[in-house]
Image (cartoon, rainbow, N blue to C red; front, top):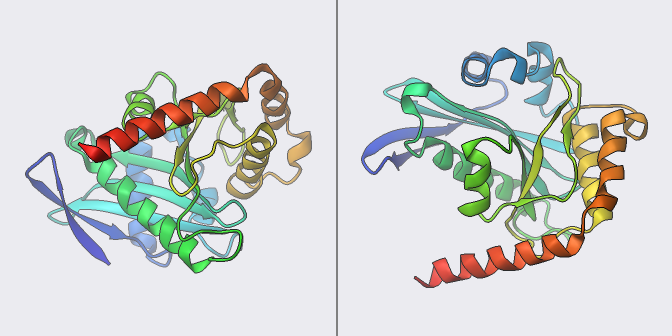
Length: 248
Protein backbone atom coordinates (compact mmCIF):
# COMPACT_ATOMS: atom_id res chain seq x y z
CA UNK A 1 0.00 0.00 0.00
CA UNK A 2 1.23 3.51 -0.80
CA UNK A 3 -0.06 6.92 0.21
CA UNK A 4 0.66 10.47 -0.86
CA UNK A 5 1.94 12.81 1.83
CA UNK A 6 2.41 16.56 1.57
CA UNK A 7 5.73 17.70 3.02
CA UNK A 8 7.22 21.16 3.30
CA UNK A 9 3.70 22.50 2.76
CA UNK A 10 3.69 21.86 -0.98
CA UNK A 11 5.83 18.90 -2.08
CA UNK A 12 4.18 15.51 -2.42
CA UNK A 13 6.09 12.33 -1.69
CA UNK A 14 4.82 8.77 -1.84
CA UNK A 15 5.10 6.66 1.29
CA UNK A 16 5.09 2.93 0.75
CA UNK A 17 5.52 -0.07 3.03
CA UNK A 18 8.23 -2.36 1.67
CA UNK A 19 7.60 -6.10 1.74
CA UNK A 20 10.40 -8.18 3.22
CA UNK A 21 10.46 -10.20 0.01
CA UNK A 22 11.27 -7.09 -2.06
CA UNK A 23 15.04 -7.52 -1.85
CA UNK A 24 15.78 -4.88 -4.49
CA UNK A 25 14.03 -2.14 -2.51
CA UNK A 26 15.51 -3.38 0.76
CA UNK A 27 19.02 -3.13 -0.70
CA UNK A 28 18.18 0.31 -2.08
CA UNK A 29 17.13 1.38 1.42
CA UNK A 30 20.27 -0.12 2.93
CA UNK A 31 22.45 1.86 0.54
CA UNK A 32 20.57 5.06 1.40
CA UNK A 33 21.08 4.45 5.13
CA UNK A 34 24.80 3.92 4.64
CA UNK A 35 25.00 7.14 2.65
CA UNK A 36 22.86 9.16 5.08
CA UNK A 37 24.20 7.81 8.38
CA UNK A 38 27.67 6.53 7.47
CA UNK A 39 28.67 2.91 7.04
CA UNK A 40 29.86 2.63 10.65
CA UNK A 41 26.35 3.48 11.91
CA UNK A 42 24.62 0.69 9.97
CA UNK A 43 24.99 -3.01 10.72
CA UNK A 44 26.62 -5.30 8.17
CA UNK A 45 24.43 -6.47 5.28
CA UNK A 46 23.91 -10.08 6.43
CA UNK A 47 22.78 -8.86 9.84
CA UNK A 48 20.59 -6.17 8.27
CA UNK A 49 18.79 -8.76 6.15
CA UNK A 50 18.09 -10.65 9.38
CA UNK A 51 16.80 -7.47 11.02
CA UNK A 52 14.19 -6.91 8.29
CA UNK A 53 13.10 -10.57 8.14
CA UNK A 54 10.12 -11.80 10.17
CA UNK A 55 11.63 -15.30 10.19
CA UNK A 56 14.50 -14.17 12.43
CA UNK A 57 12.42 -13.94 15.63
CA UNK A 58 8.72 -14.66 16.13
CA UNK A 59 8.61 -11.98 18.86
CA UNK A 60 9.57 -9.25 16.35
CA UNK A 61 7.62 -7.89 13.38
CA UNK A 62 9.89 -5.80 11.12
CA UNK A 63 8.47 -2.78 9.31
CA UNK A 64 9.99 -0.78 6.43
CA UNK A 65 8.63 2.45 4.98
CA UNK A 66 10.24 4.29 2.12
CA UNK A 67 9.54 7.75 0.73
CA UNK A 68 9.83 8.41 -3.00
CA UNK A 69 9.49 11.42 -5.26
CA UNK A 70 8.96 10.70 -8.97
CA UNK A 71 10.00 7.07 -8.30
CA UNK A 72 13.30 8.15 -6.72
CA UNK A 73 13.87 7.02 -3.14
CA UNK A 74 14.45 10.03 -0.90
CA UNK A 75 14.03 8.47 2.55
CA UNK A 76 13.62 5.20 4.42
CA UNK A 77 12.76 4.19 7.98
CA UNK A 78 13.21 0.75 9.53
CA UNK A 79 11.33 -0.31 12.64
CA UNK A 80 10.30 -3.35 14.63
CA UNK A 81 7.16 -4.14 16.58
CA UNK A 82 8.24 -5.90 19.78
CA UNK A 83 5.43 -8.26 20.72
CA UNK A 84 6.61 -9.06 24.24
CA UNK A 85 6.61 -5.35 25.12
CA UNK A 86 3.79 -4.10 22.88
CA UNK A 87 6.17 -1.36 21.77
CA UNK A 88 7.60 -0.14 18.51
CA UNK A 89 11.30 0.45 17.99
CA UNK A 90 12.72 2.74 15.30
CA UNK A 91 16.00 1.13 14.35
CA UNK A 92 17.14 3.29 11.42
CA UNK A 93 16.02 6.30 9.46
CA UNK A 94 17.64 8.28 6.70
CA UNK A 95 16.72 11.05 4.28
CA UNK A 96 18.83 12.18 1.34
CA UNK A 97 20.68 15.43 2.08
CA UNK A 98 18.84 17.44 -0.58
CA UNK A 99 15.49 16.43 0.91
CA UNK A 100 16.14 17.05 4.60
CA UNK A 101 14.21 19.48 6.82
CA UNK A 102 11.12 19.16 4.60
CA UNK A 103 9.05 16.96 6.89
CA UNK A 104 9.89 13.66 5.19
CA UNK A 105 11.21 12.04 8.37
CA UNK A 106 8.09 13.10 10.30
CA UNK A 107 5.84 11.68 7.57
CA UNK A 108 7.69 8.34 7.51
CA UNK A 109 7.62 8.23 11.30
CA UNK A 110 3.83 8.71 11.39
CA UNK A 111 3.39 5.94 8.84
CA UNK A 112 5.56 3.43 10.69
CA UNK A 113 3.79 4.17 13.99
CA UNK A 114 0.52 3.37 12.19
CA UNK A 115 2.06 0.04 11.17
CA UNK A 116 3.14 -0.62 14.78
CA UNK A 117 -0.41 0.11 15.92
CA UNK A 118 -1.80 -2.23 13.27
CA UNK A 119 0.38 -5.01 14.66
CA UNK A 120 -0.71 -4.14 18.20
CA UNK A 121 -4.37 -4.38 17.18
CA UNK A 122 -3.73 -7.91 15.91
CA UNK A 123 -2.29 -8.81 19.31
CA UNK A 124 -5.27 -7.54 21.31
CA UNK A 125 -5.55 -9.37 24.62
CA UNK A 126 -6.02 -8.56 28.26
CA UNK A 127 -2.43 -7.29 28.28
CA UNK A 128 -2.45 -5.24 25.09
CA UNK A 129 -4.54 -2.33 23.87
CA UNK A 130 -5.25 -1.52 20.24
CA UNK A 131 -2.11 0.60 19.99
CA UNK A 132 1.47 0.27 21.08
CA UNK A 133 2.24 1.53 24.57
CA UNK A 134 5.37 3.41 23.52
CA UNK A 135 7.71 3.95 20.58
CA UNK A 136 11.42 3.64 21.36
CA UNK A 137 14.31 5.35 19.62
CA UNK A 138 18.07 5.49 20.18
CA UNK A 139 19.22 9.07 19.63
CA UNK A 140 22.38 11.15 19.80
CA UNK A 141 21.88 13.74 22.52
CA UNK A 142 23.72 16.35 20.42
CA UNK A 143 21.56 15.80 17.33
CA UNK A 144 18.63 18.00 16.28
CA UNK A 145 16.31 14.99 16.19
CA UNK A 146 16.78 14.34 19.90
CA UNK A 147 15.46 17.76 20.85
CA UNK A 148 12.60 17.44 18.36
CA UNK A 149 11.49 14.21 20.04
CA UNK A 150 11.48 15.90 23.45
CA UNK A 151 9.97 19.25 22.45
CA UNK A 152 7.55 18.29 19.67
CA UNK A 153 6.67 14.62 20.07
CA UNK A 154 6.51 14.46 23.88
CA UNK A 155 9.43 12.05 24.08
CA UNK A 156 11.08 11.13 27.37
CA UNK A 157 14.78 10.35 27.71
CA UNK A 158 14.78 7.29 29.96
CA UNK A 159 16.75 7.73 33.21
CA UNK A 160 19.75 5.51 32.53
CA UNK A 161 23.19 5.63 30.92
CA UNK A 162 22.09 3.83 27.80
CA UNK A 163 24.52 2.27 25.34
CA UNK A 164 23.96 0.84 21.91
CA UNK A 165 25.71 -2.54 22.26
CA UNK A 166 28.65 -3.68 20.19
CA UNK A 167 26.94 -6.22 17.93
CA UNK A 168 26.16 -6.94 14.29
CA UNK A 169 29.25 -5.08 13.13
CA UNK A 170 28.40 -2.00 15.22
CA UNK A 171 30.62 -0.51 17.93
CA UNK A 172 29.26 0.10 21.41
CA UNK A 173 28.46 3.78 21.93
CA UNK A 174 26.51 5.93 24.38
CA UNK A 175 23.12 7.14 23.15
CA UNK A 176 19.90 8.29 24.76
CA UNK A 177 17.02 5.82 24.80
CA UNK A 178 13.95 7.95 24.14
CA UNK A 179 10.43 6.75 24.76
CA UNK A 180 7.39 8.36 23.12
CA UNK A 181 4.06 7.60 24.83
CA UNK A 182 1.33 6.36 22.49
CA UNK A 183 -1.23 4.22 24.32
CA UNK A 184 0.37 4.30 27.76
CA UNK A 185 0.52 7.48 29.83
CA UNK A 186 2.45 6.23 32.84
CA UNK A 187 6.26 6.17 32.80
CA UNK A 188 8.01 2.82 33.20
CA UNK A 189 9.58 1.90 36.51
CA UNK A 190 13.27 1.10 36.85
CA UNK A 191 12.55 -2.62 36.61
CA UNK A 192 10.45 -2.03 33.48
CA UNK A 193 13.25 0.03 31.93
CA UNK A 194 15.67 -2.84 32.58
CA UNK A 195 13.18 -5.20 30.90
CA UNK A 196 12.91 -2.87 27.89
CA UNK A 197 16.68 -2.74 27.48
CA UNK A 198 16.89 -6.52 27.86
CA UNK A 199 14.32 -7.02 25.10
CA UNK A 200 16.16 -4.63 22.78
CA UNK A 201 19.46 -6.38 23.38
CA UNK A 202 18.00 -9.86 22.96
CA UNK A 203 15.51 -9.30 20.13
CA UNK A 204 16.89 -6.37 18.13
CA UNK A 205 20.63 -6.89 18.60
CA UNK A 206 20.28 -10.66 18.99
CA UNK A 207 22.68 -10.92 21.94
CA UNK A 208 22.47 -14.44 23.33
CA UNK A 209 23.56 -13.92 26.95
CA UNK A 210 22.30 -10.46 27.87
CA UNK A 211 23.06 -10.77 31.59
CA UNK A 212 26.81 -11.05 30.96
CA UNK A 213 26.91 -8.26 28.38
CA UNK A 214 29.06 -5.38 29.74
CA UNK A 215 26.87 -2.67 28.20
CA UNK A 216 23.70 -4.15 29.69
CA UNK A 217 25.35 -4.47 33.09
CA UNK A 218 26.43 -0.81 33.01
CA UNK A 219 22.94 0.35 32.02
CA UNK A 220 21.23 -1.60 34.82
CA UNK A 221 23.78 -0.36 37.36
CA UNK A 222 23.20 3.24 36.24
CA UNK A 223 19.48 3.10 37.03
CA UNK A 224 20.21 3.58 40.71
CA UNK A 225 21.74 6.98 39.90
CA UNK A 226 18.47 8.39 38.59
CA UNK A 227 15.21 9.33 40.28
CA UNK A 228 12.08 7.92 38.69
CA UNK A 229 10.18 10.91 40.10
CA UNK A 230 11.93 13.20 37.66
CA UNK A 231 10.63 11.01 34.85
CA UNK A 232 7.13 11.17 36.36
CA UNK A 233 7.27 14.97 36.33
CA UNK A 234 8.48 15.01 32.74
CA UNK A 235 5.63 12.71 31.69
CA UNK A 236 3.10 14.92 33.46
CA UNK A 237 4.56 18.07 31.89
CA UNK A 238 4.54 16.56 28.39
CA UNK A 239 1.00 15.22 28.80
CA UNK A 240 -0.26 18.65 29.89
CA UNK A 241 1.54 20.30 26.94
CA UNK A 242 0.00 17.80 24.52
CA UNK A 243 -3.47 18.43 25.95
CA UNK A 244 -3.04 22.18 25.57
CA UNK A 245 -1.99 21.76 21.92
CA UNK A 246 -5.08 19.63 21.24
CA UNK A 247 -7.32 22.38 22.65
CA UNK A 248 -5.81 25.10 20.43
